[in-house]
Image 1 (spheres, helix red, strand yellow):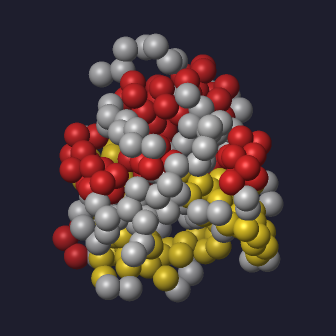
Image 2 (cartoon, rainbow, N blue to C red; image 1 turned 120 degrees about the horizontal axis):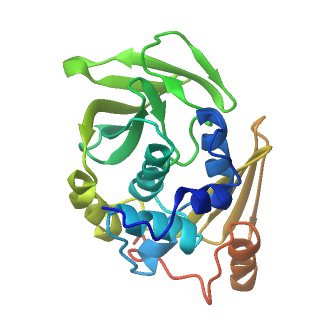
Amino acid sequence: MYTGRVDATNYLMRIGAAGDDPLDVLMRRHLETVPFENVSIHERDAVPLEDEALVGKVVDRRRGGFCYELNGAFAWLLGELGHEVARCSARVATPDGLSFPGDHMALVVDGHTLVDVGFGRFAVGPIDLDSRADQPDRSGVFTVRDAPDGELDVWWGDRAQYRLDPRTRSLRDFVPMAWWHRTSPTSPFTREVTCSMLTPTGRVTISGPKLIETADDGTRTERTLTAAEQRDVYRDVFGIVLEEVPPPLCPPS
C-alpha cells in the first residue's frame, strides 16, 4: 500500500494540473508531460508494480514508463482525487490476432469510462464504454463494440486496438506479463529503445536513433540523431537525463 511519501499535490504539480480539473484535462496534461518510454527496461531497472514505486518513478524521478507503470501511477492519482478506478486487462489487436490476457493494462474510471495514458499514440480523452456511437477525439474517431463473454473491443477508425476485459484486476495480476515484456527477446519493448510524448500539436518520438515528429494532421518528419543529439533530446524534450542511451536489451537479429 502507498505510504504517503509522494502525495497527490506533488503529482498534480508534476503534470501541471489541478485537483478539480475534469478527467479529460487530467488525461491530456498527463500525456503531454509524462512520456511513454521503455528506457528503464534497457537500463535493467525493474520497477515493482506497487503504488509507491510507480508514483515515485513518475513524480520523484520524473520518468515515464509503459502501460503498467503509467496507468498504474495514474490510477493511484485518480483514486486520490475521488474517482473509482478499476485496473483492467486488455489483449492487443495484432496482425496475427489478439495477444495474451494482461498484455496491456487500461483503466475503467467511475464504472463506464475508459482512460488510457499508457498505450502510446491513442485517444487523448476518455472513451464512454456504454456508448456504441462514434466518439470523436483529437486523434481520430473511436468506437466501442461488444465482444464475447462481456468483453469490449475498442476501435480507432477502421482498426481494432484492443479487447478489454472490464473486470477489476489488482496490480499483482499484471506482474507476469510485465516481467515478460521487460525480459523476453520477443517482447516489442526489449528490441529498441523508444520514448514518445503528446505535444500540443501532435506527437514527438525518439525510436532508436531516429527523431520522429508527427502533427495532428498526419504530417511527419524524421531524422537520424547522433549519440550526443539523442541525449539532448531525451533531456530537453522528455526531461530524462542520461549519461548514455542504453543499447537495446535484445536487439533484432
